[in-house]
Length: 106
Image (cartoon, rainbow, N blue to C red):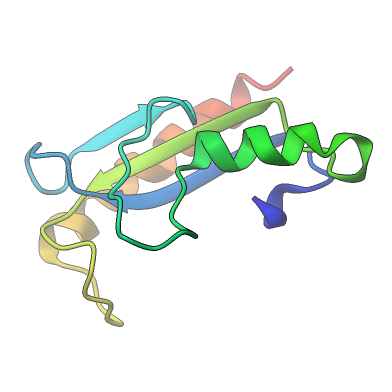
């Protein structure tokens, strides 16, 4: 949430695991994004984080227009420097979705 302060629009690209085929894309709003919950008190979904930030008022001007581009992956808990073949193959479609969203911008 903190990285979106001061912007009118935001496009977030993230890995997700929903059971869809690996490499598939989903376009979501912040309320639609599935979240993996842990026992941590710091674990909140994007929708909740934005609501808390917006309640802070003018001190945290957050975008009203937020788009999430989710790319389905096998594992969201292991980090590395390379992409799986399926995710790498999905990148052109993700870029196309981002460019389309930018072209539709007011």
